[in-house]
Length: 354
Ligand SMILES: Nc1ncnc2c1ncn2[C@@H]1O[C@H](COP(=O)(O)OP(=O)(O)OP(=O)(O)O)[C@@H](O)[C@H]1O
Ligand SMILES: [Mg+2]
Image (cartoon, rainbow, N blue to C red; front, side):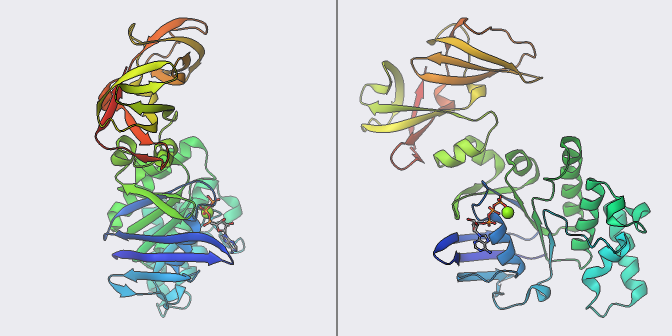
């Protein structure tokens, strides 16, 4: 187990900043997810923690000690790459044992550890096979076992589930979390899948263009996003963001004036409302349904009104409204999130309702 800190860490590639002055700290045994779009610096951050890349500036600390100059193999970090990177000519057992090759562990003892780890990740019956004789999910487990054999202080997982089908992803999410809890190993999972981050992590670190947008519990990121980016990156279907003007009289969106509470400083804003918080219950803003998509458990509608196009969800499996039908939309002040349009940051102490 290890406490892990990044202090003002930057990674430049020539003139481009892959990671731009990020600071964060993880407690022992914590499971954090680094979530962000392609190219935002997630893998670079992971590789700096693993010792594969050297930060251009800033410090990396394990249990309070600076490790910038410590070689990758001396950091005791387990890493699972997106591609698994198993050795095709080795058996599963040899793959799992590989990280111990330079350690002076007696063969019998090493094999005993490998068999224990194989049991933990439930691949005991596959130890004599070659990677090509395994399914994607089984290969993923072998990669995980190989990362765990050294009893790492820190486990780094770079999109480990992206090659798996939906059902397998679901069960592997729970498996990885179970194994992580059992071992109590500090873990960082890199993903661009917000559901994976929400369901697996104690804490989400949301990254954008090399910087940390926001970090917090999954619940905090969902209910109190600090930026427009965090609000729109987390949540599926995505949050509605309606541009408007905050005035002393209320929030003006197009020709419609919505009642507000709190701050009345005039400014351009974006009103954020999650689709599950917009209700079509007969009062509020007149709107016309333009599409209805049955998602299984619920139906996602898009409705056109003076506010613009607005998505809303209803918990019925068969669509209740058809395209062309007229409804009225409303939402609670408690579920509204207002963002300053200039800085794209959340405005505290102001809400709107319809
Ligand atoms: N070795 C390298 N040389 C130059 N630029 C690099 C190198 N590695 C990464 N980059 C650049 O750094 C930025 C961050 O890359 P990184 O791989 O960390 O992104 P990511 O968040 O992991 O993306 P993805 O979700 O696609 O894996 C990108 O713009 C990328 O092109
Ligand atoms: Mg990556």
